[in-house]
Image (cartoon, rainbow, N blue to C red; front, side, top):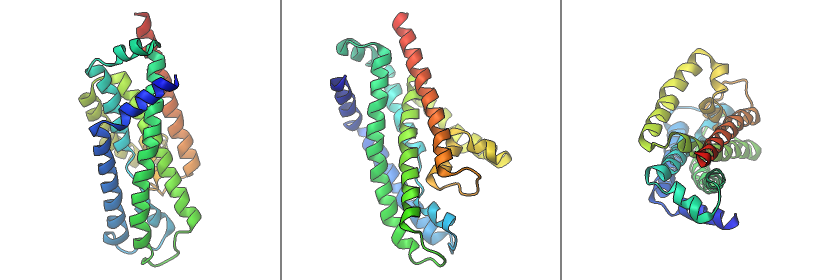
Length: 239
């Protein structure tokens, strides 16, 4: 099992896609920090300053989806299970674990860029400064959201198995459906995966959910998706 995890981890970190999403995540983090801290005007409240540290978890969700779905598009999922002498469900579970570990590395890298750019810029803003504890809470929320997003993306990718279609649907849900639902029913919108991720990253701050509560909501959605994906993959063993 350790050997399989090592192989899946190596596969996930050596693709060109992972570095593309890493660069995209760092670029967005830096741009968001500059836009929020400088271009958006005066920030004199703590929630507004936290937003400068916010990341974009949907990028890692897309990375997980495209990578996991690509295993089926390129017909490598079944041969991997045969070589590993494990059930397809077990191989998928290990693959998702590898995405979680790689996602953690990407999350730390992207959030290091966000903090490195945002914190010096926020120091020039009026009002109370972010304390170390407050900044750490935002970073921890972002890291958690990124890891959960990578895992959720891998699970969804294993279910849809069509990278392009899955990515299009995902973007519609994140950029169209979630804002509409959140605008009409704020509390219910924050109970959806993208809404909870927004609270975790600090991008959404007018909410009744705490970061920990939002993390629990996002984790529940993620665990459910993983369980469904693994169960479906095991049923394919019986087919």
